[in-house]
Length: 440
Image (cartoon, rainbow, N blue to C red):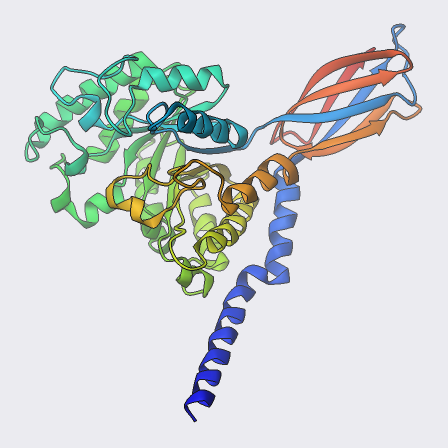
């Protein structure tokens, strides 16, 4: 009898998993994601090849090779040059540049100004774990052609604020915050093109005791101040927590709409995804594709780009590595298919590089030896292969070659008889057809 009961329980558990997986494996959902990726992440190109006399060159070989993505795939860069050995640092950098074109670098006030007016901007400043001096990170990103996002201008949660700032003086905070933003704009306004301007404001309102006292107009003032200081080309984002973004979405929409109605500049909406219950995710209890897609549709009504700003998926547990890889595959495909989405940022690239107890989740794409986990390999396959265009075509009688490819920068290699020449081409989103004429 006991054995039969266990068998029935096992069958019910298996059925539950099958039902749960159906939402992500549902053919209609898979087709929606595939169709949206094709529609929103690709563009058409028409290339005309002329000979030296300006006449169309028929039957020339055109080799199309995508070099970069327009879409931004990234991670935080909080432990650059800080790992225990040169070999670990080398592996970390190699893994980063192989996968990502986008880096979030830390501007936490507590460590950037540990003593008032003692700023840790410069390369070679005192070493603090997960808080390298920004100059060092900016230099590295520029050398590797990586787009930079600053995290963050203002995050007034007490445990991330300097001890020398009073937690209860909102007027003094405003003056000090204005000075801080001015310093950041003057030093990094040209190199850091995207900022989390205000971090976790919905969370602050929900649990104000954990935060420093702020003036009643804190949010609107912060964005106005940032707008006055940073170049108009800089993108100023609002950023908030996972549950807030996905389950209290309308409240988030209302907050941003309140700013927009005042004609306050907000350039993008940040969405965190620290999802620490993979079993419930895989069982279809939380963050189903329907919930996620609906949240992004709601946020898209604001008419602003969306950004996935922070991601943690644990690998702790019996099947943790494979579960993380499965989840990563599902969510990245969904995010890449959302038309308003502009970038995706994993949070801690390697195990052991997270904040405090967050390391217990083993949420890196790399293990503690900086070796790739299955999830890293999944992203490598997507970003560097499935979502990258490489093909060879021939020109027609009019010297034209057409193709459809992912948005980004390309090299075009044209071969005809004994002559070969390389050209550059860019496919941009928002452009129906990219046209270029090259003379061989």
